[in-house]
Structure formats: C-alpha cells, structure tokens
Image (cartoon, rainbow, N blue to C red; front, side):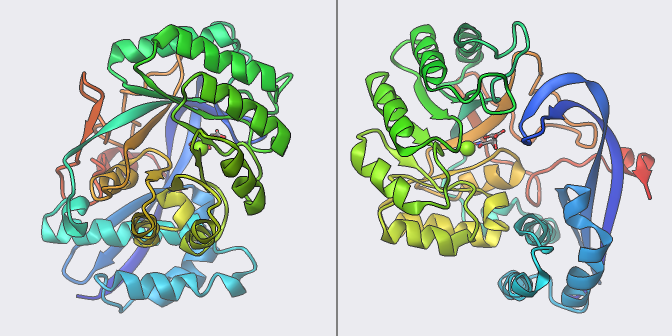
Length: 382
Ligand code: LLH
Ligand code: MG
C-alpha cells in the first residue's frame, strides 16, 4: 500500500460561533466560515480525512512538507511518518505547526480504520465503550441572559444537569470581556454553580490563564471550599515552576499542561518535576493521535490520570482507549447555542450523549466523523 495523493479541500459552511480578539468563541448571528479537509489517498483507493483550519493546511505547508514526505510511502507506517514530519518542525521557522502535523496523523489513522473497516479505538485497543462527559461551558461574555453574570452560570448549569451531565466545567471571563479577569467574579460564578447543582455534580474551573501565583492560590483555596474536582490552567504554562508551586500549596488537584508547546517531551518534564496532579493534553496540543497516545501512557506509567483536552471524534475515540482518563470534554456549551446539531459538513454529531451523561464509542470505521461529502463538494472554494 502506498500513498498516491495528499489533497486539501477548502469549503464554506455556516456557523454561529464568533471568535473574539483573544481567540475565545462566543455565540452570534449566523455567518459564513471556511474549513479545510485534508485527504490522504492510497493506491488501493483507501482514503483518510482530517479537518483543520485552512491556514494550517495552506498550500505552502502541503506542497513543501506533506506531499514530499508522504507520497510513495506506506500509510500504515504512522510512527515513521509522524517522526519524519515532526523533525521538519525545527527548520520550518515556526510555519509547520503542531496542528498541521496533527492533521496528517489524524488522516493516516482515519485511513487505516476505513481501510480495515475498524473504528480507530479498536485499532489502538479498546478499554471502554462509553465514558462520562463533562459539559464544558464557553468563556464568559457580556450577552444579556448568556454568560455575563455568576447567576447566568448557575442557571445554565441547572439546565445541563437536567440534560444528564454529571460533571460541568466552567470557563469564566477572560479579556477582552469587560472587567476580566476578576478573581472575585470567578469565585462567585463557581459558588453560583455549586449552589445551583448541589453536592453530587463534579465541577471544574478553567479560568483566566495568566493569573499570578497569589491570585491562583486564592481561587484554588475557594475551589477547595466548594469541593471542585480540578483547577485548570490558571497561570502561564511556560512557567512550570509556578505550577509545581501551586500544586504543592493546594489540596485540589491542579491539571496541566494543556496549551504548553512541546508535545509529549514537555509533558515528560512536568511529570518528572511533579508540576501538576493530573496530566492534560489533547490531539491538537500533542500534534496528533500518535504522540497523544505517548502522553497518556507516560501519565499512566507514573500513576497519573490524563484528562484529554477538547471535543471531537479523535479525542473521543482516544478516551475509549485510555484507562487513566475519567471524562470526555463535551462542548463548548452556551445557552444560546445548540450543541446537538451537527456542523453542515457532518451528517451526525460524533458525540451524542445519553440521559445518564455518557458518550459512547464511535462505531464507524476510522476516527468517527460521519462526513457529508456531498455538502463539502457543493461548497468547495478555490
Ligand atoms: O480559551 C478558551 O476559549 C477555552 O479555554 C478553550 O481553549 C478550551 O478549549 C479549553 O481550554 N478547554 O479545556
Ligand atoms: Mg482548558
């Protein structure tokens, strides 16, 4: 089996998610958005797919790195191909991003699953067939009746519990939201949610990511009082020693690193330095499924849980294979958005949740995206 083609299809679809100047999503009126699908094709007709931003799959990246390194190669040699592409990153001047190499890796896993007629979690080795989801609430905003006050969070959390969620994570207010960040307001939102959902729902906080040590400590102490399950990314993750300090000074588990660069290499350093109590990484942060598996196993070998960052078919499929992962991150959720409706380029959502709060293992060949190829073909742009 040999790879014969690497193709990027750029297309438009509709979305109600708008990114603010700091990259956080919020609801708004429907608008056009562009998306790109990477296709890796092999000589027996097998294909694998991955979705990414058009920028991560721009022609300069695909022509300079992907095509020369993939065409003519065995698509099942995922580890070799990933290593080869990863080693091009150093000389790329920052152009070859983790999310670009991750897209290639995802497409190769998808191709393998589709070619063999197996869901990806079965290729890796299934550990479980369902996992509890936590409802991951979008960052705070200034929308009336949205997520602009602690009471809004409390009210929304109640609806999530009624929907079946057994766990909820808050993202609170971050710049450019007016007045953000605000330690008191973050604590008030967490208190409002605990008050609204009672003692039996697991709660987590993912707040502003650049708090000082002392502000992070203040929030962490409040979360201990409120019986929160974990405290996520309250400080700049490039300062590993700040996380080590915070973990040592709090009894609530500190989780990380989510966004620190360096894939499994960085995470190995965090483990060696006891910088967090729970490991964190996702397919996007790791630069693919192949390195994400290494992170999960590394954490397991050190007795650490590893909670996957982000939603989507690849992370969900991995959750089914990682015994030391407790939850799937389902979201981001907002009272003005309907998460249960698939994007126009998918036929179904990959992660329907049952009434008990479980999301089930994808059972279609490949990573688990049920792609609407007709929609993509009809909405293709140059
Ligand atoms: O900043 C945001 O919008 C969120 O923090 C987002 O990145 C989210 O993916 C996250 O951190 N989840 O855990
Ligand atoms: Mg996070």
